[in-house]
Image (cartoon, rainbow, N blue to C red; front, side, top):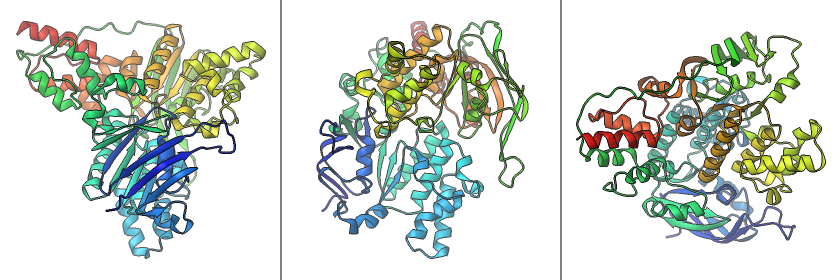
Length: 579
């Protein structure tokens, strides 16, 4: 039986005319059978997305062959059939959204297949209902959040009813509820016989696949079941990967409780293992935490409202009555479901958007003042966008990062050292990347470049919109450590993220957004303690808080504000010692 996907000694070089260019794929040989569920993981730039684009002939091998359902991707006569066989949900959804409304975009593929109108309408409705976008089907895609755009892209693929669907970081911008929905969808589609290939930096997503392929420098480094791939954390580290969050927590807990089984990958498995430890049931008081100290406010937002396309038939309210106070020093997090208004709020904090309703003050700058110096505002508050490709415009990486400091008057060795400093801060080797073409970067590498270009300005306030989305685990961990170091030097961080662990680690205070409004705020420990409210909003908890919640449901006397592995270990040691 012929495999659905066959790679034979595939080598691919983006700039093949340049003999010094490094291959993005270097001798890849693999097979994927019909009906498999495969996860592809690897560091930024390891070749994952390049591999994905070979699956439906968007890229053709420099050397070697790729066959899809027996069809050679080099044969032009097979291209249409190949692309109907393999559907792609890209890392950047705007790469595949082309129509004026959501409904029209999802209908584009079925229309090009020549299907009858009734069949097209039925497929479009089913696909949009599956991704929970039917009610907004007439909205223009460019008014959607990044996460919503990803769902539109997925709906467009689902309407084609392909034999194989490739998810290229399709959950990177989604909130926890959206990620769960897509993961359940992958399981359902797999159960229906569709071949699922997911490319992800979420290690917990990879554990749900039946097979994991690990890429490293354009080659297949590992190809095995999840339990085998995640059995050796040292090897994973050499590949710039790490264990899933629950497995990391299990590893940390085993230092104090060596009787726990190794390599537990899911929260239910870890909870059951912990529940077997000796304990007594009781009710615990919350851990006493130091409240945020009273400080002068650096940022004040009062009653902020914003409507896109105001006064037109397509107007859409993104913010309503938002209130926010950020003190001097420290860091503040924005938490909320996809489309809750976090990105729109951040764009008000450096003057990209001006207040339509309410008031905004950034340091000494009153954004309601029509004469405010917006260039000075943006020098003070630097914003790294949710989609980094929106702010990258230079041809070479070094020029992109140098652009802002050059406008500030830096030149010569001072400019070079500032660029080097910013690149090293985000994990980009100066000599290896300064002359790289920006268009040839991977999604994670683009994010690093965009961040470095903002950091190179050394702003007093750093606004980060999903800063770790698209980064491999080691890059993410290193970036978080660098950002914490910047915070400790006095730089104020305001971070929007769907990663609960990142917010628990980086921020002292949080604001929760829902439907364009700020509905909950305060110390991070207090916000995460509002577990029921967070879950009702489709949000999640850090891994340690998730396990603590499950143990509390089994009668363990754990406080409601356990957020980190260290806090969980300390509490469990105390409880088991009393038993």
